[in-house]
Image 1 (cartoon, rainbow, N blue to C red):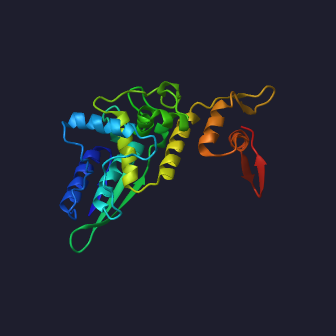
Image 2: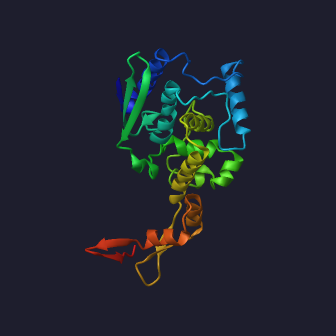
Image 3: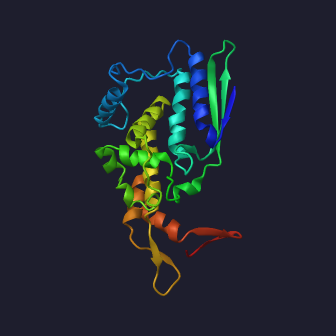
Length: 269
């Protein structure tokens, strides 16, 4: 089976995948089991959110039962991850897919799902650094800023959303959407997809670093055309998150080496 989608087909694709997963499940429901979800949906959601936020580790502690062979569940949980990192609010759509994806689902001779492959392409990278006044960048940035615990904010050097240059223009809330809860859902989806705590931490470090890149300021050096950093505080934070020497980073940013013929020369920025 092949399912392809663009921006207008995001919700339809999710429904198709949910349907295929439910009718081909090998005895499971295809959904996360939460034994404490016995109250009203709203109360249960709040209770579950409080339970997750109380965890001091990066790993999300829930009632989810994850098995290595549970392909249906993993197929369903791929959607929150794709939406977090590839969807954004536009003028016409609050959850617009800003990339194309091709989903191939394979079945065995018995009709059960035997695997799936998702190919993505044409991601709108420019949205990371610039958005219209009534739009937003990708969901993951807001999810992390509003959903991270105090410990995570210290660990990933997170600041207030208004302090980031990349999202200051298009910073808007979405009616009916809870970025904090969506962040927990994204972390849970990563865990179900068998991402290790170290891999999840590396992803979040990169997300935080991307936001900080928008706060890097340069100025012209006196008596020359060379650019210099106005303040190296931001680059120090970026290097700490990415685990690289600050001196090498600043040199690559301001004085990159380019190949001219067979030789390398330093280019003044």
